[in-house]
Image 1: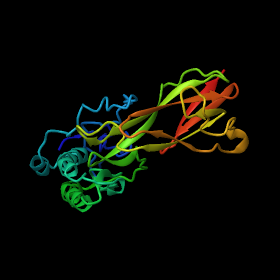
Image 2: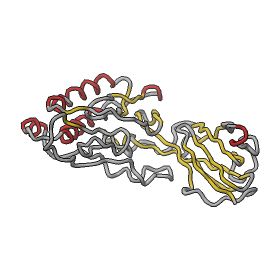
Image 3: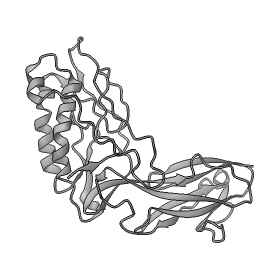
Image 4: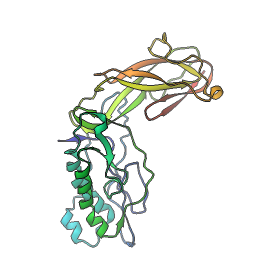
Length: 287
């Protein structure tokens, strides 16, 4: 089973302990002044795939340096980054075999605090024990070399979902982006997009069921249609005056990858649109 992934499971960078993105694995050796920098760096796909596709995901998974496990075990000069890269490459097919699900609660982040994923990886509940055991075994050379798993501030990307019988992650994005110019009192059409990533290759790109997405706006009114005829939240919500604006829900229908809606600024100046479930805030300026 091949997994197409936009969020990479690791970030192998230099041994200084810097972090390129969340979910990264970086090795630091307690006493290795001569250890060189890591050989690869994975990053979150910046292409955005804002149209609901998995654009940018076809690059595949970085399997790390070509050195074999035995070669690295035999070499006293093997860097912590190399050892972590090899362990990660060997763990990935095991992880792919443990993504089966029947509902969202079958999916979780696991295998945290290991050389392959200090912040964890996406797996199924049923396969958590097998993947954890494999990670512990594959990280044994990393630990034997004196390498240490750093403590990282982990930020989870996306929301877990069971789609096509396998665990995946999805985001909801707002387009067009950058946001267009707004004029107070004038309707502007916007769109929410369902973006699937870290899912099994060939799985559905559309929402597997109706997804209710929380939306709220400040200094303006959100409408449930792109003609701005039906307000989704009370008009003239002013976060500055009231402290917060009410949440309402827009639904991305099952089998679709987007839903259009409208926004009308109530006055000139700065406002925002906030999209759940990750509370993504998009600032806007109205004339």
